Length: 245
Ligand SMILES: Nc1ncnc2c1ncn2[C@@H]1O[C@H](COP(=O)(O)OP(=O)(O)OP(=O)(O)O)[C@@H](O)[C@H]1O
Image (cartoon, rainbow, N blue to C red; front, side, top):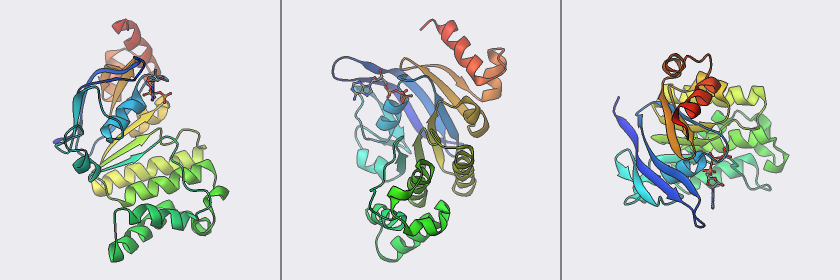
């Protein structure tokens, strides 16, 4: 597998002096599902927003499919889809109108029709697709936004807390979608999550981030054995202790 996303000595200091990301380096292989885990405020969202070109790093760089987020942000945008944690949809639009509007930014004519049909099929929202988004549950809104992100056919999919606040059924639906899409399209996925169990089941590798630094990284079973831990939460606690950060 070759490299798809290369995060290189990334640092982000917000105005006011908060160091959100502090020398982060990691690589995600093409077709891999990579999970960033860490507590509130550890720098996950900041990192994902930089990868998606929504935020500029203070120093360092990220290469997405070979394109630099600093020097070639437009090229990066052409190969990436980003699902923010609070992926909103305009309340008064129907699900169908939302999908069509979002996809019309990238596609036209016949291709737009095909992508809209694909997003509707991915979302599996049945008759709700014709109802206003304000009638949707949080899970349905997230699935709607994810179906647009997938119908774009990105080479890299960036998902901030894709299942946070969703019930068991909707979380499973989202996880299955991500897995299926990776199998089918070979997309690279980077996601953040607080749900260690979910990350264990979904991700090929994880990066444990704490105070803007990567303090452990690897396949979950290897991390568990390296830290003599029975689950990822224990890995995290032992890594924090070991690194003394
Ligand atoms: N726009 C901003 N201005 C100043 N500080 C910020 C800003 N956004 C985030 N921060 C700070 O940067 C740090 C990292 O925040 P970030 O949202 O990246 O963490 P996170 O790991 O995604 O947290 P969570 O799990 O709660 O979403 C925190 O201390 C946060 O308060």
